[in-house]
Length: 137
Image (cartoon, rainbow, N blue to C red; front, side, top):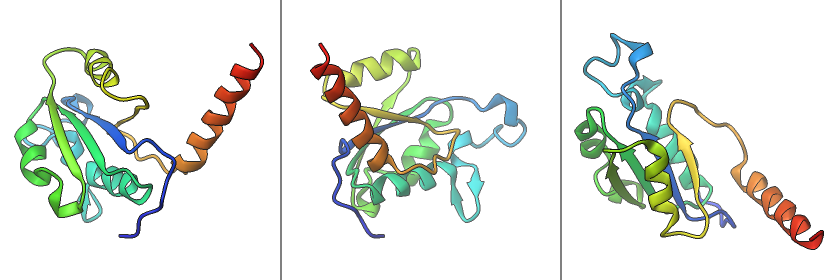
């Protein structure tokens, strides 16, 4: 898998703790992020996409059947990245705020979507917008 040198923050968060109740019975024994899409789980598509944009540290927020996700990815060594886990015991917004305290920039992905966006271009646009906001004050 090739990687880009990126101006993106190198730490991403994937929210993957929901029960996926609307997908029952598929999620009775498998967490939604681990449902197969093609030849690999949904969450792996998101992780691989983040890796191609230079992200090297991912925190996955887990709860429902979390051991399946944690056992599948481990610490991320197999993908050449660092994967950390936060076991949700509170609302997802509390989890995000806890992580924000430890990083300057944060981008989160809710794992129920497969973004097909160019995150590098999106982030550069946000930087330009923020710079313009600062100049106008």
